[in-house]
Image (cartoon, rainbow, N blue to C red; front, side, top):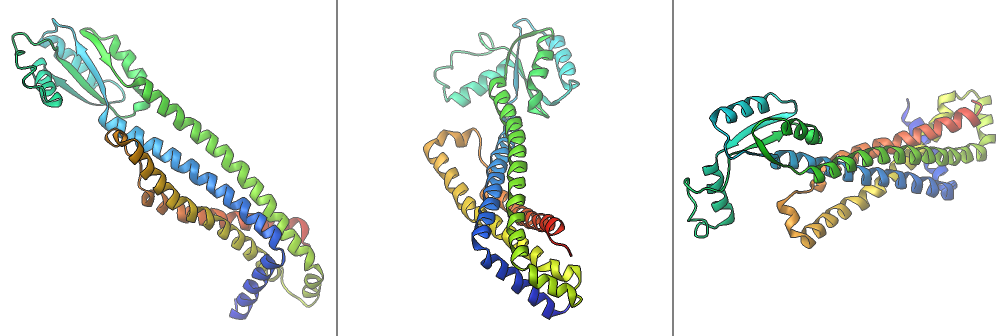
Length: 299
């Protein structure tokens, strides 16, 4: 392809965007809205999944044993737990270790100094970490059926909420993205259709003098790509600093949340979103252009 032809394609594409600026602005705005909703959905979903991963690593299932549990009971329970599905690791904590950890974590050496191995009110326990926290309820039900278990402590309520939120965001985000993508394609199609209509005489002359189909198509395809890329760039420019600011506000207003979970850094999210958004925007433009050309341009 000659440089002169490429220059002509881009010149005509930019002229088409300016010539139909109202429709172009509407198309860019629709693509920007679509990409912005994708960004919001992705940010929410990736942070929920990130929190679930942190919970999997930091919060397990605590299994407290009966007061009269002997060494054989402990060994039998350990063997049953390590072979259980979705169990990643099992750690046994003796009553003495539990008391020492309580003294250290509560900074209560003086208050608890009267307790030792002879009058220790605590019992032995197991700390169980899972490979997939979404199966926590299933694992807890199995543990409840084991002999020697007195009490189970788990974060089922919080886990179920995060898992349900993750599923909802995935479904809602997918439906919303498809709906907005369809709207974007329709408006881009109408924009290109308007360009085709205003240049119909010129296109007919080009056909008569022997211009190929692709020579006529390329300016409209590039026009669609321009609209798509500009529409994708705007929400990225807005959302990136907005996300960083929002995370900073959350950490400032709720300082304790940092000790429980953390959010993903903006650079980690938008280094993925930036190329994806630009490619998605360009594809929307190409799709809209091709639909318009195929249906409304007889070339």
